[in-house]
Length: 253
Image (cartoon, rainbow, N blue to C red; front, side):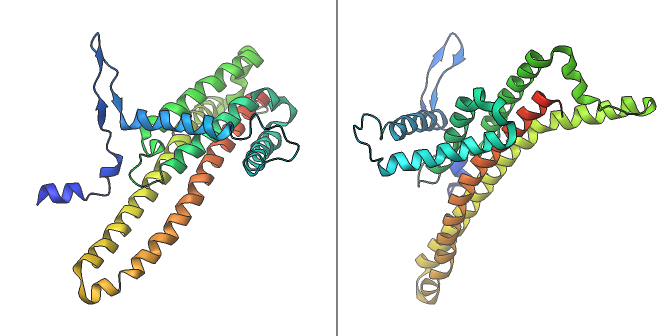
């Protein structure tokens, strides 16, 4: 009974499974379902971006129009938050937005794996971005970068308290950025699994319950549409917050 309960657990879909064990000088380089789907995401991105390449036509294809729309959305995020000084960061922001979007969307395919549903991945990504942003801040401002933690005109007695509060709120950005993406993707996929299991249980029971399985099934279809929207929205929000945090260190807000 315990095995059956575990097998039908809505959290089973988040389990990391080793596909190809590999150990080199005591270090684990095994291929897991997580790393496999990361490779799949990169392949799909390259394939999707190459669909309009090598087209010798003045009329853009539907794929090219879609990519140009995505390009424009990302460019607007950068323009609204960084202005012209953000142009040099556009390749990174565009890649980040595209990567997160495909990670979320591919995770919606049945029997696939959602990479962004693991806090270790989202935290690692957020921490890498955070470190990079701080390096940019030091390159641009030098030691004046520490003025970020002390606004002008602050009374001297409350300076230590204010610096502590500002520093903690600055560090928390890493956690909010990673937990927001992780929590939304995990909760959404868990809810989908619960509703799908409930609908299947009612259908398998037969009789009158089988007739009413259309209710959770209809709810499941609605939730799938909502989860697809959340997949795009969370990629957008993560990219938007990255631009906001980058602007903070450039302008010392």
